[in-house]
Length: 186
Image (cartoon, rainbow, N blue to C red):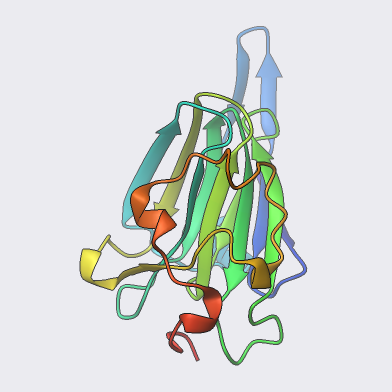
């Protein structure tokens, strides 16, 4: 086994650690092995890879999601730098509906986070020039693209940057509050 897959406190969210083989040159790691994912009950066909670079620490991207039939499962990892990765459960029938999970991901640790469809996802960069890479199991669809406001107080997310100092896109500034979201995921 080249991967360790751990369930986290919110059902469906998984932390994945790759075994690194190191020598004087650096390291090698298998970050996605379909058979090992399937053996752990993760049987998604990833169809698109995405990458974002954020120049400054304190950049917030999110909280984003796509609605059915273009809902996406994401496999997120950091290629450079560090982030605070945040997911919010949007599944109305879930015991953790409206709750969030925040976890630090970094290039140094090499961990990945599996975020199933039905969750809003976002992150805050903790270091400059952070690069985040994620695989998705559905293509991007602007018509199905949605989000929830990153600083919605009702979510109780403790971001590592003050709202006034956060670098946020105009689109993300205009996202609705959690209570305003329709029931996209039952």
